[in-house]
Length: 150
Image 1 (tube, rainbow, N blue to C red):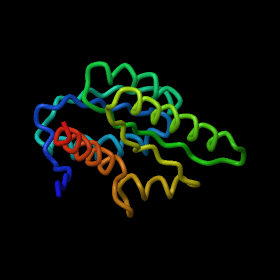
Image 2 (cartoon, rainbow, N blue to C red):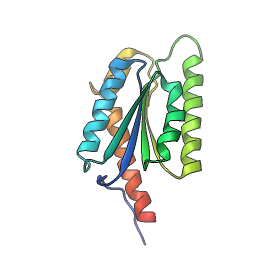
Image 3 (tube, rainbow, N blue to C red):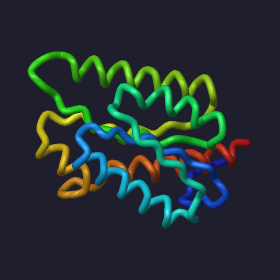
Image 4 (tube, helix red, strand yellow):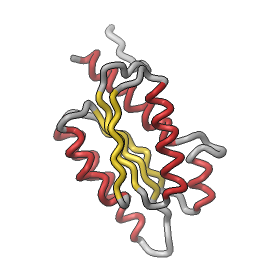
């Protein structure tokens, strides 16, 4: 039996981070968590691109994948009284998944979809961990698995 498990070493990797500026109080904390994780993972080369909103993340992720090993997507889509947030999250998620499958390169999901700002803050480092940190860690582990499979 051959067992493959990701590790936390990203040394020598080129990693892109696309972060939405919308709900910046939240996304700034997600970015700090992601950068902290990557720094402790061997200091890979990191490119951070700030975009206006979550809608713009896929097109930038696509460009980053041309020259990077993987991408961390960070954003915060607060649910509202309409279906706008659900549609946005679904479309962005589908676009990012399609990019992964087309390129064979991972994009990890650090895009929050909470109902309230309080829930968002909890997931950006206050009570429930930092989802930016988790997304960066997932990217590093996935890159390690891909390297072992090659």
